[in-house]
Length: 246
Ligand SMILES: C[S@@+](CC[C@H](N)C(=O)[O-])C[C@H]1O[C@@H](n2cnc3c(N)ncnc32)[C@H](O)[C@@H]1O
Image 1 (cartoon, rainbow, N blue to C red):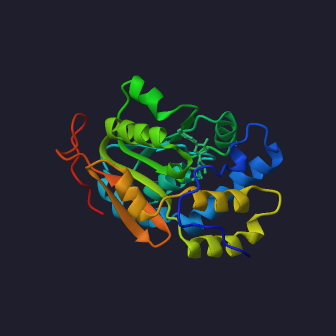
Image 2: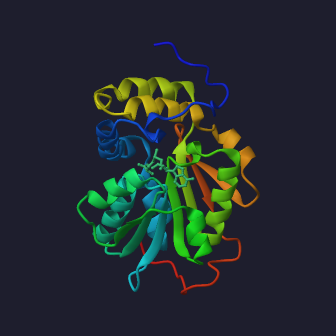
Image 3: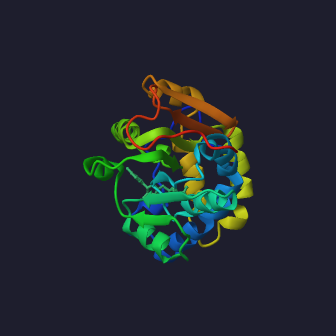
């Protein structure tokens, strides 16, 4: 396989699943397989342990917003892990795409998890606040203006922490995903869109250069960027937040 030029982001590359007229059966298979892909590459188990579980409390639920939740598997997984650990998490997954919303709401319900067809700006306009605002594989979808708006919305919406997790572009990530995703490719957009996503994604250095002060980029491992923001002056308005024992 010939690798494309990956020295620069390919912001003009488009994902097949974003086409309004894409094959609905292939799109459904793509949503269905996101859970496997996320479990293999996104590392939310580690992010949950490092960044989310230390904020959970036994005396009240903690509210999480998952922006661009797609089929909702990250939202469902986080709620399940918290319940397993004896905590209550309320997760609202939002996505502007009607097809993603229909898929997410069509899965078996998980206690504490709900979905809405919305943008982060809608929740800002409603004056909503969440303890934690997060996203998975959303950043690379966004143009510069949308990216800046998402960061500003996230800061307004989050009391305690913002966690935006995304692919870190590299040649080895591209080659590895191209090979590993072969079994998931038939009848879905997983492999083609995954490779496009890698081409669209930022390196850690590019992400650091793109964010305003107050944000930091963690590298859970070489193929992943985790963009983190914590309010500088504590949790701000809202219920008291002492850190629960972990
Ligand atoms: C690659 S999917 C990721 C879905 C899910 N987060 C996951 O990791 O499985 C990207 C999702 O972001 C949504 N999206 C695209 N632009 C968005 C925006 N400006 N605000 C919120 N969601 C957006 C798309 O509709 C799509 O469902």
